Length: 67
Image (cartoon, rainbow, N blue to C red; front, side, top):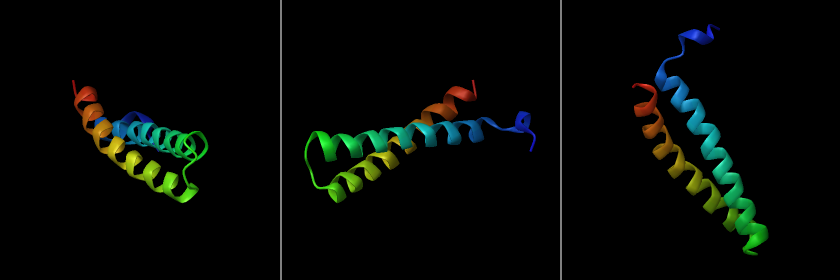
């Protein structure tokens, strides 16, 4: 695999996935352990927030990498 041939869209997608995963896991742990919510509720809310962050971060990163 030639890493120099990655497009700005590829870079934005990969970085957005890392950011969204970190936010989703942090949210899950914070709601489950910090707010004492049920583990499944924290997992669902963490996943939903991760998806939302992924869409927002990907759009912002694509516009940033294409400059």
